[in-house]
Amino acid sequence: MLQSVKKRNRNIFEVLARGIANFYSEFFKNQYMWLEKAVLGSEEGVRVCLHGFRYLLMMMRIDEDQVFKITIDFFHFYIGNYLEQNLRGEGTFGGPSYGKGPSL
Image 1 (cartoon, rainbow, N blue to C red):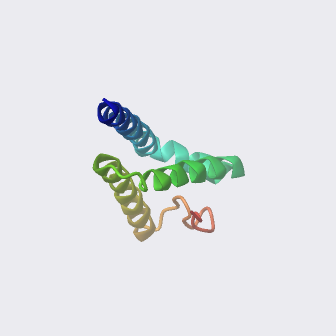
Image 2 (image 1 turned 90 degrees about the vertical axis):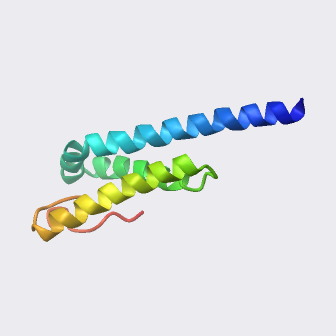
Image 3 (image 1 turned 45 degrees about the vertical axis):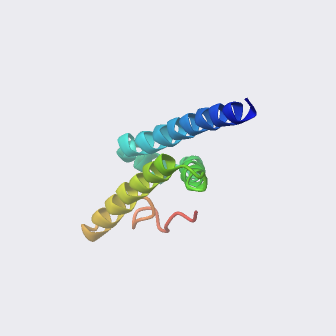
């Protein structure tokens, strides 16, 4: 019985962790341009984004394959956009218009 409770609790935790990772990942992906404007406009925007990025990084420590894949997918997307925009000479998070890269 104890094993079944532990397993059920672990499953609930994994579902919750996947949901949180999906939320942050999809929010940052879908609001990329809006977030860029928020970061360029205020220090508060930078702080909020850095907290969200840190949260995703901490989610990578969870021993659950799907959560890890979700977070890796997000950072692949983010770094790809960052590098692509820098190659085109456009401002982006941490690009020329902001002056320094985000320090996670």
